[in-house]
Image (tube, helix red, strand yellow):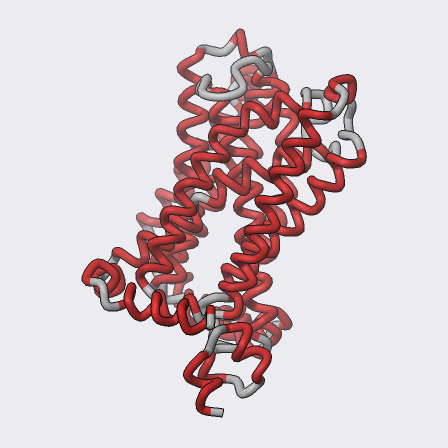
Length: 190
Length: 195
């Protein structure tokens, strides 16, 4: 049911004039993709510095909470740009993206990454401030930092997989993959 | 007298020598002469080297290495931005800039090493294609410039004295140059994908 609704939504977006303009433009799609990828350096670059500091792998002599606080703004700016450009990339090729298994797993990992970020923030606020100048953060924060690194590595890797067609709807007969990717027409044809 | 003068300006003279070398290479058409000889190497990279064979045979491995390349560039960009924005006085104003310059350098070097290693793998997989791309050669030139700038100019200069002794405009100039160089490296890399 949800796959049918998503596909309908995809077809509706694909019929929009602006969606077609984004793909048809000589440079528009490339610029969007380039901005999406280059903003990684601001968003994930900042995030990884925070995570690596929690693990004591970078600037262990600087207060961990200070690093997190000072990099928060550039990181958020980077993520906002990434989400806007990411949404526009989906808008430009809606059906193809909605039916991509990698895109779906990526969205799931993104959700997990945001839940982890929320837990990380809560733990940081709740933690006793004495650890702040220690080379490594308390165990709970280190665990969150490792989870964050793993999830974001996954998000970037899956983002890189999206253009590849290994498990596209037309390239597989595996019903589990077809269902997970939301290949409604191919599933109905089986 | 001459020796002490030369040692005092060793880095400046090295940069001048490199620029002179580039001028000579261009003036005598050496670049064009060497360019043609490089094609067999790029073809070998794609068809016979381990990286090329793995990259062209297993698409999933190629895509995964591409992702590691992106992640390395993200970490590299993060360390560059954190340091340079501090030098520009945009962020970390309550942390001494010396601390950031030394604290992020190890991470920068690892990220650069990983980016170069994975970059060679990615280049090997499409060796005979990138050979003809002007943007690839621009990227290589800027990458070389950026690495030399960082290792031989920016880092030694910023760790040789207290930043309070350096003119704020020199610090800003270093930061802007560094941001522009690494942005160009990343942007040209992305453009290779579109070409």
